[in-house]
Image 1 (cartoon, helix red, strand yellow):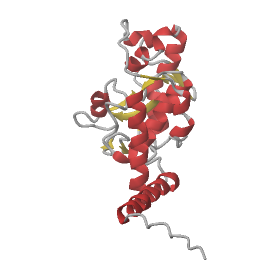
Image 2 (cartoon, one colour):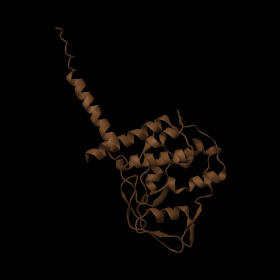
Image 3 (tube, rainbow, N blue to C red):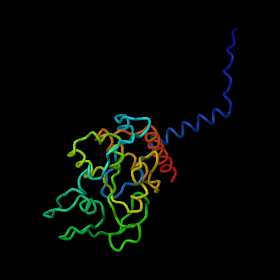
Image 4 (spheres, rainbow, N blue to C red):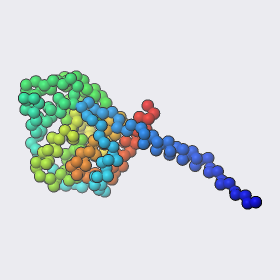
Amino acid sequence: MTHTQAAPHPPKWTVGLLTLSTLLLGIYTLAPTTGRIPPGQVPPPPLAETLSSITLVEQRPDIPGYHRNRFGEGWGGAHIGSLICSTHEVMLAAQLPEATIDEDCTVHAAAARDPYSGQTMTTDNPGPGQRMEVDHIYPLSAAWDMGASGWDRNTRIRFANDPENLVVVTARQNREKSDSLPADWVPADRWARCWYVRRLAVVARGYQLSLTADDASAMRRQCLLSGLADAFR
């Protein structure tokens, strides 16, 4: 009679490692990974649907010739009912709670949460650095380096005024971010980071703008961390 030798049991540490990796994979797959969505926004699609369509480069090139006016002389015009206001004013009215707008396009609204910092911001008597501004999620200067320098002027103006690429934040957060991409900057509010990088990926895909491989890695990491945090809070 032939006896088959039983397979040796794997070391306990390998079982623990496999269990942990399986748990993490399950959390990453099943947990919500968008984080907090700012008012007036919709959840962007997962990075799995966007990053594969974006060209990744080793590093951001430095393309000479950038000026803000390459993307139009300030904000473009847009309609709010019968009023013709700037894109900046339209975004304030669209994204802030209980917003009203005067005939001169001045916007008044209830206090809102800055999506980048999580802090309260207001249109009335803001403190230093708390004045509301409209940020380009994919910065104009970065866009110039990553593909926009080859666009015609109309495309650049459309990009600079596209609501898909605009979000209301405080002046302080807008300055801190400057023209950084995700490898160098993400929102201070960790719950907003996955939303932010997903939204940036949507813009990059829509306008065929490149990102660096480091940007893509940072973006994936933020959504993984957001998923883990959501699963355990």
